[in-house]
Length: 200
Image 1 (cartoon, rainbow, N blue to C red):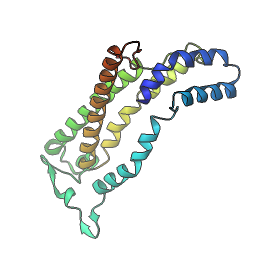
Image 2: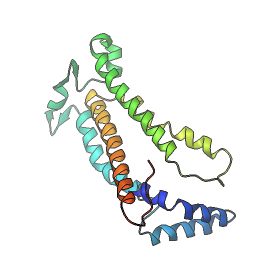
Image 3: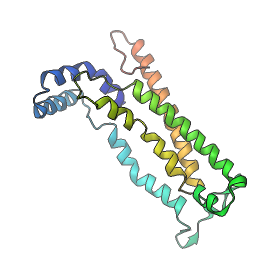
């Protein structure tokens, strides 16, 4: 995992930051060389996300388009309990069906908000220390840590099919990352001379 590599290199990165803090260009060069020596990259965690973008755009198009290849989108005529998969929470509010259909959206929003809250706590706990960071950096980090909650807001404007997809993928991602962290931690514990790459 890219996160594991970053945490394992933290002591060396801190040394570089202290040594070259007055020369940002040299610091970037040395940081790049360090990652290259580890056969990794500062952007290793970003590339898989970018690779998924075309697939995700097709999935969302399937949830949002009323027609597919000239035919009605049958997916949007299905229901999630009492809610048509093509109906958004905003539409439910505007049509006065909040009491009959709002509960489904509320459940999805609660799930996504819980996942966002847990993701925020984990991100803050695993944040790499940087004692030489500029004043206010910690505040910026904490503000950015609220970004996962944007998913909940976004889910209110898309069809319930997309909201269900968001709830499912956010839960899956959180569980998957936690399982991988624990497995990598255990692997490091039982490897002679190995240092844990992932913090609990």
